[in-house]
Image (cartoon, rainbow, N blue to C red):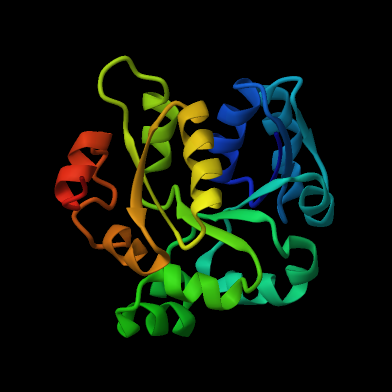
Length: 209
């Protein structure tokens, strides 16, 4: 699969490298372009780099891993390029970084899935990779014992299948939480957030079958 990465930092960079090493074609992009040369070299021959526009044109599936406060503006600027694509969105609202928009999201109690869908209309949205520390992703991918659980929420069943397959390829256990409204159960401050739980532990914590 061709995957475009928008935001090649702690999460996007790590997950993109895992996908490239698993055999997917990955195009990294970032506003901080100096990071990309080494990242692509580390990721191997399946990786390339380009502008945000390049990554969005290249990817059948897009991973958006940018500060949550930038998501609304991103959606406005690029909605034509991401319409109808599977978009896995990883951001978390931190008021100390993202300001008033993060305060609004968190005080609403609706959860990030609902807000991300408002800001990225027309995409096949999946919330994922937001609840696990980047160093856990680095150190624990493809571990032999029960793999780290990656909660996924979406209103699109086929998009969930795509995301779940990519989670497995990266070396983790996809945990299907349900619709986007349930993404709030994996947001900042929840039991599973930054817990490094295995897939079975996440399912138990969220009372999933």
